[in-house]
Amino acid sequence: MEKTVIEFMKKNRVVAVIRSASYEKSLEFARGCVDGGIRIIEIISISPGSERLLRELASQDGICVGAGTVLDRDSAERMSDCGARFIVSPHTDPGIIEYCRERGITVISGAFTSSEMVNARSIGADFVKIFPASSFGPGYVKAVKEPLGFMDIMVTGGITVDNIRDYFSAGAALAGVSTALLGGGDDYHSIKQRAEEFSRFST
Image (cartoon, rainbow, N blue to C red; front, side, top):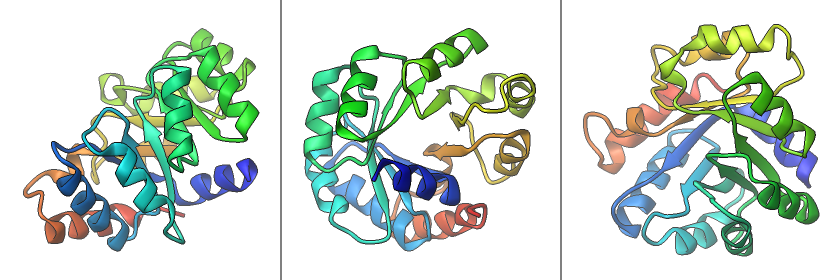
C-alpha cells in the first residue's frame, strides 16, 4: 500500500493543503479542490474538525488524503486512525517516522539543509519537505538535487500557478498549495476554478 501511495503522489504532484477556521469551510475547501481535479489532500491536523474531515474524505475513491502539521507520534497515530494515508511533519521526528514505517504510512518530514535531508531520508522519510520554499525559490531545489538526485522533495509555502512549473522543473516531486487556492475568494466555485488551474500541472 505504501508504494502505491508514493506512486500516486508522484504521479499527481499537486497537494492541496486544507486549513480553515471551521470544519464546514474546510469541507467546502476540500470539495472545491477535488472537484477541480486535485487528487492529493493534506488536512492540517490542528485545524478545527480535522479528524472528522479526514474520516469523511478518506472513504472517497480516486483521492489520497493525509494529515499535515503532525508534531509527534501520538498525533500521527490519531490521524492514521482517522484514515490518513500519509503524514506530513514540519520537522524530522524519529518517533513519527518509526510509527509510519511500522504502519506502512507514507511520511514526509520537514528538512532544509542537505544534512537535515539526508538524515531524514536515512531514518526512513519517504519525502522531505522544504518550507517555506519561497524563501529560497526553485534555484535552491535545483542546487540540492544536483548532489542529492535521489532525494524526493516536497515544496510548500508561496507556491502559485506562476511558479509551480519552475519548482517541478527544478526537481521537486510534490508541491503543496494553500493560500493560492483561496486567493480572490474562498467559496466553492472560486476554489474549484483555481484548483483546475493547478491540476494542469499534475502529470
